[in-house]
Image 1 (cartoon, rainbow, N blue to C red):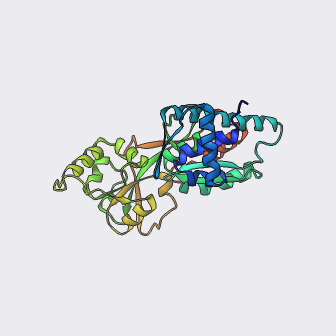
Image 2 (cartoon, rainbow, N blue to C red; image 1 turned 30 degrees about the vertical axis):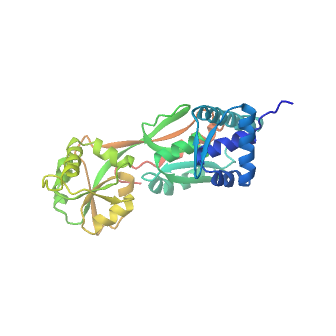
Image 3 (spheres, one colour; image 1 turned 45 degrees about the vertical axis):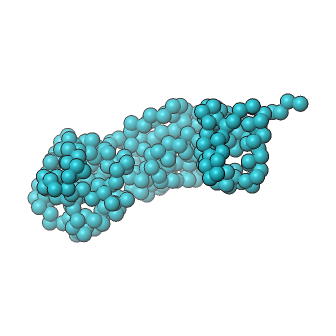
Length: 316
């Protein structure tokens, strides 16, 4: 008798490849660990290949297993498309939309996006998640999120990205700081004080440094030696822009923020902002989604609402 693999088995191996842990994968699939383990083993025997290398406390996907997991994900995506096509004609704006955003966009965009989206699509609930770009990329690929808001460029196979708006960077300073005497600042002027940044690996930190050769060189110098007085004392313990904002309030240094994070989110009696001299550094905020996502109207509404929330000339 010829066995036929099931969609449930494909879902099991995709989840296990993501979690690399039988217990967590079973929880995500809402089954017991023995049930998932037996199903995966059965599929391996049916296919005649080893998908996962198992050792005590460790699971790794084999090279062939990675190819089969990727194809299984595509199959599951197509099943979702078939289900949605079967419902064609129903309101695309009635089902929940799962949207992710990076930490330096979500907290400042979502408070403005939610009212706009509610007015445009009152019957479409929004599930939101904030995370790092790498995590959002994986969740989008595995169809755990429908669309993500990230800084462009964003390259991913079978994913479409759309620029929404350009957002300039500004300098955040304590009230009365010597640099507040200037209407606009050059990046080299930031080297006169402690420069507060997010930790290495954060995409916004990288964007700030890449926008200014002076700051990039200063970071290299301060990393190489702490005795170089020409380099700023970079404090990277700030895990979020809000934490760094509090450091600025305390007089620990100055920082660079995207405009949306600087407007309307602090006490004007304690902090001031200054723009950069033109051409000011900026980032492009964009929306990304899978090419197979079957609800284009939902994407259109989301992109339109997000575009209307752009920060222009200091007004949110």
